[in-house]
Length: 271
Length: 249
Image (tube, rainbow over all chains, first blue to last red):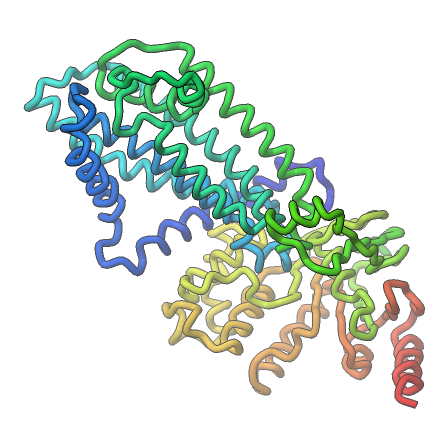
């Protein structure tokens, strides 16, 4: 017999509501593409166009000597886009599900989890653009292909964990403070410039220690660097990147889960 | 028949009512700086205890603001009691507001699966009952139309059909027996009576003592968050009717 109120049977609860998780992911993806004429092609077109703009603008500034620059930009762009979309969706997951949460019992963490997962699915689909670019650069531009490509899954998983953790924190905050959304928007802009999406840190001469610190402290910096190492196959693997970003991501999930758990019973009174 | 299905023990619920609702960071910081955050405590439920046995049908009576909906939400697991505990054996179908789990961009068909999942059922389980749900709702023609184009009656019909197609052990009815037109209303009442005959346990909220007398065998009256009467349905309904009449004078 199922007792809905007991907290102890977390696993049972999850097994029961895994269908809801699947439905949320399915729903988000379907609704996202339903009303657009280009449908799923947006997933490819959007990073492609934004990469095109960045490449066109930045390939001649900064004394740019970065090898395989279009791929370089695309890698950064895809990862940053995933992070910002997943965390923003996670942030809104509770407030948009208010109708359900107020009326029916559901384990609430299903919402940030489902919403970040649906972003993850679109992200994985959008990676096809990267694959197409890679094939072109390997065949015609002499980009090396190594087994490291398979390792690209590591930074991607770390990135997902990070996004889910931060999504839970933001979801909790946005229930109590509606203006968090605007603040986070500004924060994401800052984060974009602190992530080496279109620039290469090696080519920059950063004199300010604060900026340097901020760059290194940004987990996306490590994750993007790891991902590029795997895809483009140049440079060296840095274990610091791995341990720092993984540690950061896990810490965010723990903090997120604790904050979420502590406040979830109060959500209903505020949404 | 004496198996306890729903047991509510010493449940109290405290709301912090804020005079001005602060829901953004800007105001919150300003208010903190000015030391203007003050809450008024409000006990929506005070020390409520009762049990419902298997197959029993409990009517919950009370005036507006007496705490009826709060109580049902607590039983459904939506609200957590500040004090005390609630235990429910088996699957609850809360029909507190039909169609709460719908997505308006989704078609009727897709919403059936989404709503089913919100209630904790698998896709396969819903698939088996899909035809029955559609037939009962009489929405065959509109099932592939997005819900946003449905009328509120159509939404409620779909919600009712899904909620009753599954086989819950406990049914929570919050004045939902007024769904759709007269024809559908008769049909839905009949469906609910059928479910009663299968031995389902019911919590029913209403202002209408006639309806409560017809449906329930036990009743409680809530007033200002407290139970003021608890017992056999006719006795309790008489007390309630007296209360209503004395209020009129």
